[in-house]
Image 1 (spheres, rainbow, N blue to C red):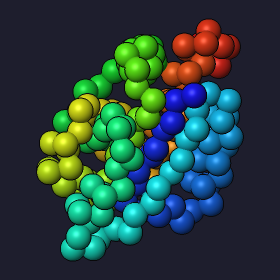
Image 2 (image 1 turned 180 degrees about the vertical axis):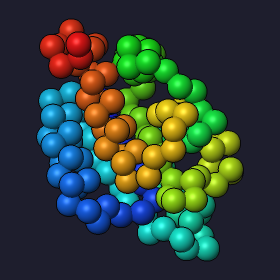
Image 3 (image 1 turned 30 degrees about the horizontal axis):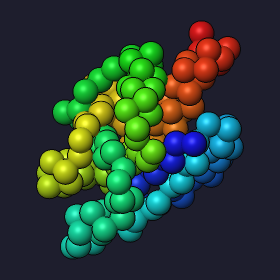
Image 4 (image 1 turned 180 degrees about the horizontal axis):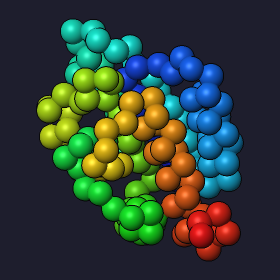
Length: 146
Protein backbone atom coordinates (compact mmCIF):
# COMPACT_ATOMS: atom_id res chain seq x y z
CA UNK A 1 0.00 0.00 0.00
CA UNK A 2 1.32 3.43 -0.94
CA UNK A 3 2.27 5.68 1.97
CA UNK A 4 1.48 9.36 1.56
CA UNK A 5 2.68 12.15 3.79
CA UNK A 6 1.20 15.62 3.57
CA UNK A 7 3.82 17.87 5.17
CA UNK A 8 2.22 21.20 6.08
CA UNK A 9 3.61 24.39 7.49
CA UNK A 10 0.93 25.74 9.77
CA UNK A 11 -1.92 24.20 11.70
CA UNK A 12 -5.58 24.00 10.80
CA UNK A 13 -7.70 25.95 13.23
CA UNK A 14 -11.07 26.23 11.55
CA UNK A 15 -13.37 23.28 12.12
CA UNK A 16 -14.67 23.22 8.54
CA UNK A 17 -11.11 22.58 7.31
CA UNK A 18 -10.39 19.90 9.91
CA UNK A 19 -13.72 18.18 9.21
CA UNK A 20 -13.07 18.14 5.46
CA UNK A 21 -9.54 16.78 5.95
CA UNK A 22 -10.80 14.09 8.30
CA UNK A 23 -13.38 12.98 5.78
CA UNK A 24 -10.85 12.63 2.96
CA UNK A 25 -8.34 10.90 5.23
CA UNK A 26 -11.05 8.39 6.11
CA UNK A 27 -11.82 7.81 2.43
CA UNK A 28 -8.14 7.50 1.54
CA UNK A 29 -7.55 4.79 4.14
CA UNK A 30 -8.81 2.21 1.63
CA UNK A 31 -6.05 3.15 -0.83
CA UNK A 32 -3.08 4.44 1.10
CA UNK A 33 -1.58 5.02 4.49
CA UNK A 34 -1.96 8.79 4.57
CA UNK A 35 -0.63 11.00 7.33
CA UNK A 36 -0.50 14.73 7.87
CA UNK A 37 2.48 16.28 9.60
CA UNK A 38 2.04 19.88 10.74
CA UNK A 39 5.01 22.13 11.43
CA UNK A 40 4.91 25.43 13.27
CA UNK A 41 4.82 28.39 10.93
CA UNK A 42 7.01 31.46 11.05
CA UNK A 43 10.06 30.19 12.87
CA UNK A 44 13.59 31.15 11.77
CA UNK A 45 14.52 27.49 11.22
CA UNK A 46 11.42 26.66 9.14
CA UNK A 47 13.42 25.40 6.16
CA UNK A 48 15.53 23.11 8.37
CA UNK A 49 12.45 21.70 10.12
CA UNK A 50 10.77 21.00 6.77
CA UNK A 51 13.84 19.15 5.52
CA UNK A 52 14.12 17.13 8.73
CA UNK A 53 10.48 16.05 8.40
CA UNK A 54 10.92 14.52 4.92
CA UNK A 55 10.14 10.79 5.08
CA UNK A 56 13.10 8.68 3.97
CA UNK A 57 12.87 7.40 0.43
CA UNK A 58 9.83 9.50 -0.46
CA UNK A 59 9.24 11.23 -3.76
CA UNK A 60 9.01 14.89 -2.77
CA UNK A 61 6.30 16.98 -4.42
CA UNK A 62 6.32 20.69 -3.60
CA UNK A 63 3.06 22.58 -3.96
CA UNK A 64 3.93 25.98 -5.37
CA UNK A 65 2.57 28.52 -7.80
CA UNK A 66 5.26 27.81 -10.40
CA UNK A 67 4.54 24.09 -10.31
CA UNK A 68 2.98 22.04 -13.07
CA UNK A 69 -0.78 22.18 -13.41
CA UNK A 70 -2.59 19.09 -14.57
CA UNK A 71 -6.03 17.67 -14.97
CA UNK A 72 -7.27 15.15 -12.42
CA UNK A 73 -6.78 12.30 -14.90
CA UNK A 74 -3.17 13.35 -15.46
CA UNK A 75 -2.58 13.51 -11.72
CA UNK A 76 -4.03 10.01 -11.35
CA UNK A 77 -1.73 8.83 -14.13
CA UNK A 78 1.26 10.35 -12.36
CA UNK A 79 0.41 8.57 -9.10
CA UNK A 80 -0.11 5.32 -10.98
CA UNK A 81 3.27 5.67 -12.76
CA UNK A 82 5.05 6.39 -9.48
CA UNK A 83 3.58 3.19 -8.06
CA UNK A 84 4.43 1.13 -11.15
CA UNK A 85 7.98 2.47 -11.02
CA UNK A 86 8.36 1.23 -7.46
CA UNK A 87 7.55 4.27 -5.34
CA UNK A 88 6.28 3.26 -1.93
CA UNK A 89 6.07 6.72 -0.37
CA UNK A 90 5.04 10.17 -1.60
CA UNK A 91 5.48 13.40 0.34
CA UNK A 92 3.48 16.46 -0.67
CA UNK A 93 4.85 19.66 0.86
CA UNK A 94 2.54 22.63 1.50
CA UNK A 95 4.14 25.85 2.69
CA UNK A 96 2.66 28.33 5.10
CA UNK A 97 1.13 31.66 4.23
CA UNK A 98 4.46 32.81 2.73
CA UNK A 99 4.89 29.73 0.58
CA UNK A 100 7.84 27.33 0.56
CA UNK A 101 11.48 28.33 0.82
CA UNK A 102 13.23 28.12 -2.55
CA UNK A 103 15.75 25.62 -1.15
CA UNK A 104 12.91 23.23 -0.28
CA UNK A 105 11.40 23.55 -3.75
CA UNK A 106 14.79 22.74 -5.29
CA UNK A 107 14.95 19.47 -3.32
CA UNK A 108 11.59 18.31 -4.66
CA UNK A 109 11.48 15.89 -7.58
CA UNK A 110 8.19 17.42 -8.68
CA UNK A 111 6.48 20.79 -8.37
CA UNK A 112 2.70 20.87 -8.45
CA UNK A 113 0.33 23.82 -8.72
CA UNK A 114 -3.31 23.28 -7.85
CA UNK A 115 -4.43 26.31 -9.87
CA UNK A 116 -3.38 29.66 -11.25
CA UNK A 117 -5.65 31.09 -8.57
CA UNK A 118 -4.34 31.81 -5.10
CA UNK A 119 -5.73 29.70 -2.24
CA UNK A 120 -5.19 29.96 1.49
CA UNK A 121 -2.69 27.25 2.42
CA UNK A 122 -5.33 25.64 4.65
CA UNK A 123 -7.72 25.26 1.73
CA UNK A 124 -4.90 23.90 -0.43
CA UNK A 125 -4.59 21.01 2.02
CA UNK A 126 -8.27 20.11 1.58
CA UNK A 127 -8.07 20.42 -2.21
CA UNK A 128 -4.96 18.25 -2.32
CA UNK A 129 -6.54 15.51 -0.20
CA UNK A 130 -9.64 15.56 -2.39
CA UNK A 131 -7.55 15.31 -5.55
CA UNK A 132 -5.51 12.41 -4.16
CA UNK A 133 -8.75 10.61 -3.31
CA UNK A 134 -10.13 11.42 -6.77
CA UNK A 135 -6.92 10.06 -8.34
CA UNK A 136 -7.33 6.72 -6.60
CA UNK A 137 -10.96 6.60 -7.73
CA UNK A 138 -9.86 7.29 -11.32
CA UNK A 139 -7.17 4.60 -11.12
CA UNK A 140 -9.71 2.12 -9.73
CA UNK A 141 -12.43 3.11 -12.20
CA UNK A 142 -14.72 4.23 -9.38
CA UNK A 143 -17.84 6.33 -9.75
CA UNK A 144 -16.64 9.33 -7.72
CA UNK A 145 -14.97 10.96 -10.73
CA UNK A 146 -17.54 11.97 -13.31
